[in-house]
Image (cartoon, rainbow, N blue to C red; front, top):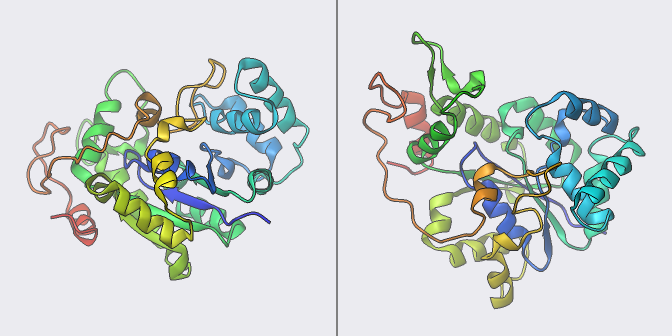
Length: 300
């Protein structure tokens, strides 16, 4: 019998991958990388999507299969993982999560999925197939979160339309659009879950009081939180997926996590909602909708 999984959801840059790795280091849990099972209904469909995508969406799934079933994460194991998936091409994609959960049982599967929040239907579809899942919605003050995302979007790269404000000419990169849209999608998708299955957390609270916050989350999940468990959770860098993998599948988590996986425990400096946005050249502040949602999360 396997435990109900814990799914962490957030807008990009809210530290969900790091917290997922921390909780996944608990002795009674197992932290998975991003699996992206929502991208297609079958494993064959997933493999087809992976063949045409250019954003390494397959890396987490390949590394997970390689680690759990193929003896590690070197290039030979990744090749074996791809063959393992091809032999299960007719499986529904979400059956893979059930398979992984059975393999790591009785440990609780913990995963964050940074691409899941973009579409409300994707979150709802995922939750409909795993109705017993617990969901932790991680939020962060929009100014530092958006500032970090804007910095990553600089350069000669393709910027997704969701990050652009088309109300100005030329369109301006503005991550507040994604911050608002994704957080609202998550709120709407989890609203129908029983209260005991959903929780919201400000990432600043984790940095302000890591041990107290982890103890509170563990109590919600029904996990023990003794000194051994805390020591393990405070070392997310020990997760088998926290560092870059082999060249054929290097990623599997948000880039910021894999570039610096340690939890350093620094409290982000206080930020303001008012004032011009540093990543825009027109001096505009946050949209009123963003400010209102941030107020709902306790930011002032």
